[in-house]
Image 1 (spheres, rainbow, N blue to C red):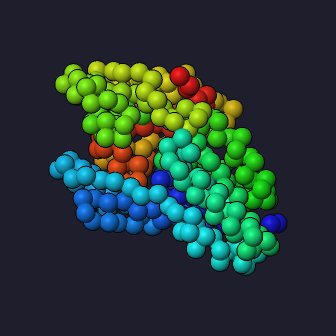
Image 2: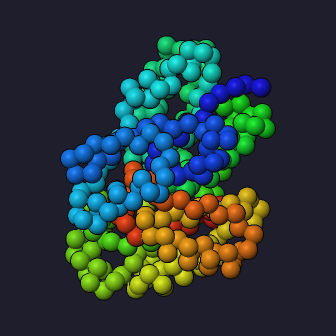
Length: 292
């Protein structure tokens, strides 16, 4: 069997025990809290993530930085020099230029290390969507698929990863240019909660707006009921930005719809949390993506 390593970047959320048991590795990503720079190098525990969201609630600005081609080269080169391929799962190209960076790195490494290769996957996903694909990547490797074959399988499966989420504070979307300032101010005053998805281009459109958290959560559950694909693994991620009670309630409602659902609950990584703010929650599952 062709041995290779599997990497994903830290904008993905993955079941920690699965990552450890199946040897999924991570490319570190940097984020800042105010003037303090921090490197996210591994899956962080909830107690370590809470100070990040507390800082946001205090009005401290949070930002992220893109991984450079040289960072990828430094991480992947030692494996290639050993003759081992690298399969890499990248954050959606519709949200960042990370995928461009890893492609440049793969091209340069191909010249220096022809004995092995980097196989980058544009997941068209984020957070738990990358987690779902990383889990499948590990299972594919254990079935004996080569890195190239695995990449091809993941490129097919990525179209079936559905992300549906609610953002609590519209000002974070405003800062990221997702909505205009007037809409953010009006929506905040009226307690409007946007329902967003990641579409087939890997971008982040708003599909619906609900007044209040209760109606927004109901909409997420309805979309899960209507869109999930029963022919694919019954695995889902519920990801939240430091709102335990909302995550618990969402899981309860999803289980009422599908008692057999295998749900992983994760607190949102700071790389994505920097752009959505505290209070956000999401369900991510295999199904039919929504396009607008």
